[in-house]
Length: 227
Ligand code: ADP
Ligand code: MG
Figure 1: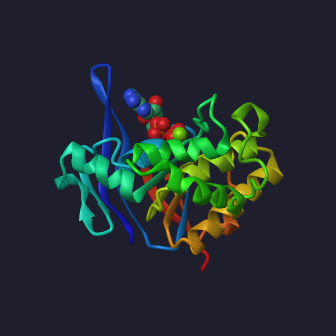
Figure 2: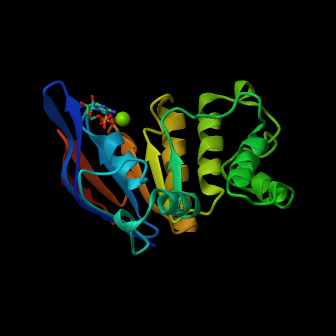
């Protein structure tokens, strides 16, 4: 399944005027492809992700996920599509302080209305797959920043999404741990054949992306295509 963004425009009220955060952005991400969106702070990257996630409605333009034009869906329909098809990794690993790593994933299953008991083993396997073998019963304060981000990624993958949207996954990490997270995202993208968008303000580790695009003042331009 692919993610197709066409002519997206997002504005915010700004005093008497409007601020254009996303300005006629078009981007296609196919299954198994990792696209990196780089750009300075304030260039509109998070707004673009929020629209792609159907969390924010664009002023104009289309968001098509797996062939479904989300503009034609009700709020409930969008929520269903999001739960079924979209994995979101926010910049801050918004983990619940009282839950262990495996419970973070089970809580997400619970939200999808799935039986938690049947998912326990799959959740443990997913944590092992992101490099957290033996740490599934740790709570967030017992994990490093990089490990918390891995739990965050595992949780986003737990619903088997076809689209993965990742906002500044390496912002809180040092160089090596940042590289490991980007490598993990690239590996997941290929293995699970998800369409992944990774937003980042730093220009490191971009060699793991299939395509790099740059955002400036809400506008997108191609930087490079590797593969
Ligand atoms: P980035 O993620 O690249 O830092 P954002 O999408 O967060 O960029 O922000 C783009 C622009 O939109 C910035 O000027 C920011 O201040 C503004 N902005 C973001 N969210 C809102 C909001 N909810 N209301 C008003 N302005 C916003
Ligand atoms: Mg941002």
